[in-house]
Image (cartoon, rainbow, N blue to C red; front, top):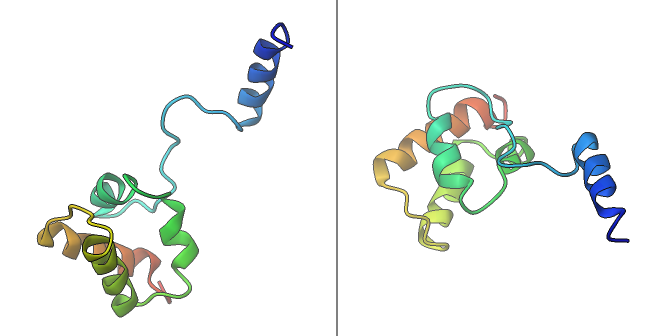
Length: 96
């Protein structure tokens, strides 16, 4: 089994199942994306905005960002929270 390990790693890496370092961002390029990547990816996948886009409008994104700050202790300054919410609404708000 040990001899086969390098071959298994090579096979998995060529299929994209194993990656070295950070995967590229899947977020839309727009003002505020850097703050979303910096603050939000520290705790969860960046797939979260895309998967919730059909459900959340501005009030929904405000509640989500507020929950991350208040309930989970995300250290996001108020000015960054506003920019993050604006980004999420513009690019992943329901109807965006």
